[in-house]
Image (tube, rainbow, N blue to C red; front, top):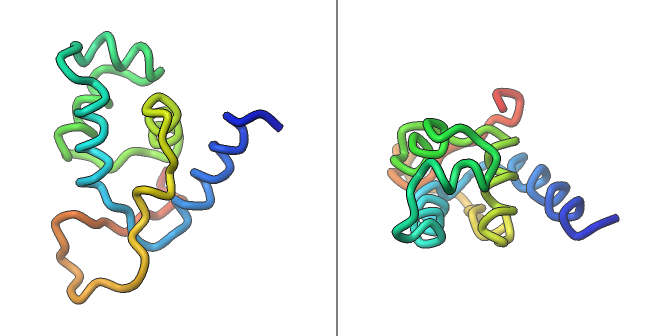
Length: 103
């Protein structure tokens, strides 16, 4: 099994977790993109420029496929974006429940 396949499997397992730290994910997306344009980066990632833009702006939660593509592009570990433990309230600004069935 290749490293990429292992990363994809791990990402799928992580998205089955309860909470996803979207703010950290977005921050790392922006850092990786730097001064490059959204269109160029989205082509590199393999998703549409509007999907990339909406995820980076925090307007949408990435689908499983988009999440995996972005994590691989960032050369990151999907586990970095998982929140362990429980939140004290349900309206956290940085954490969202992820339903893999919607992905």
